[in-house]
Length: 68
Image (tube, rainbow, N blue to C red; front, side, top):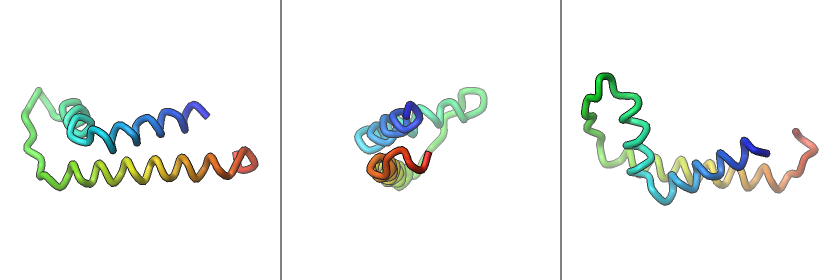
């Protein structure tokens, strides 16, 4: 249950703030504080990923506890 709530929160944040989410994780992934130039489509893909995560969590919620 906690995992689903965390995933739902991440998904919603990616849908609403894709640039902030991607930039946050890219700063952590870059070595030595390097600046990383990303293509504009990366943020669109992050938003789509957020939508997929939210839909997946909501679909799993509808199935109940029988599969856990």
